[in-house]
Length: 117
Image: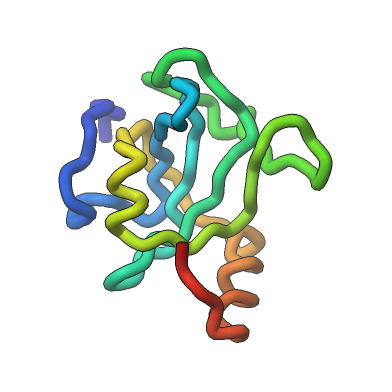
């Protein structure tokens, strides 16, 4: 599969395990990974690495989730509405597998009947 780097329309083509670049309101780019897709919710991991331009490729081994107090924002699990995620203009980078350890936050969220942003 080629990392064709195209903006994905409506969420019908988003992929579990997909790495996507997203743009923030300051013109910087981040990389997120889709952990789980539900009918109305996209569960994400947001990595702390920032880029000044939209990355065309990324080494998955270089992506990290920071620690509390780090200068760069990251989060291990974020439940977003599909509409909100689409507003981030996600662009597909590459396909990865989702590791069981990456789903810990999702499992806690599910048990707690957590909310959605």
